[in-house]
Image 1 (cartoon, rainbow, N blue to C red):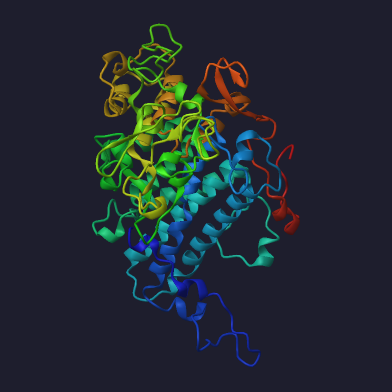
Image 2 (cartoon, rainbow, N blue to C red; image 1 turned 90 degrees about the horizontal axis):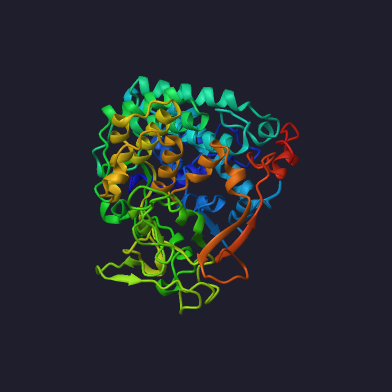
Length: 533
């Protein structure tokens, strides 16, 4: 949707303005601006309204900063970002929590505007009307999934509500929301209201039948409904057009956008729709200000090239050379000393992260990484001035479907050698593993833990870790105590020589759900608060 997805119609923004003269009937259109009365009478209004829904899905910043709320990453900037969620110090008035609530409901309103008015639009075939309606319904389901997975029970509605009505809404039970959005997705999928693919270049990024199915799988995964996860993901694997892209690092290059692995992504294009988030994670030597950085906990979670964890007997791991013989995805995701970024001319810009090294070393300046590591995934070497990027941000890809399938089978005790070879082995082969010890079925090992670790490594810094540690109910285990940066060997300010970055607190009695924003409760006394907030 390189073209359509970047349209922000001024007509749509004005269509809700009312005439101000008391001498004119409220049903009479003003002469100087678009109104709700005239907007929906135009054939292209449905497409304009639908286009306004897509940018509400996510932003590049929201996706890339999501892992700072987990044991994968850290942000050193407090204002405007989610640092306090990562360390557990946030409150009922925390701005980031408020912004998530506000932006998701703004997206829901945009979808409801289309869904409530599309039958007024002339000239649409039934097929196109059903397609547009389905796209908006899937986007709305995304929003409700994001809301309930963070807040639990939230107000659920499918009509455009007035300010007065919004101040009377109560929280809908989470189970009711889950049932409703799954039923909506089932209706869309079973009736084939969405195409399996789009052929026109301007339609890239639009929601397909497969995207609706993948979203359904994600919701079922979060709910732990393993049999249904297996069924949906197996359907995508057997009947969908997707396969793993040949290169793991190549997935995140402009040259390979919209490849055969992408199920749904955020469409960007320079210079019309861009973001500058990579400025916030690149090293100073690439003119970045590294306020978002990977943690050592993520680095140490990657297995070695023979398939073992770094602390497992027989692992091909040397603490003196910690980045050798590791999962190839580590070097593609995290930049550490001796690793580097491929530039547009094909040369490699190598980084020195050692303490005090000029300009990228840990502790050298306020622009240096707070952990001693830099993010490499989503580096766009084709950036425009001031590191502006038009690189698409992937929301759902086929590797995630394979991982969901493997996890469901592991939880059901059905992850056998055949299923392993159809999921984890394929993912590791694409990643660059060649040692058969890492590729073969591990037999009676702890398959659930292996699949969980694989999911972390494959999808690191793609914004999915928070939901994983919440649904696995391990957040209180991995988000308490100090998180760490690089190894310096010093005794002061370190744990076993690893830099202490931040002391975090995750209270299992309250932090598995975010608080309902206090400003919302001040306006609407029907909104109850989550436990212990």
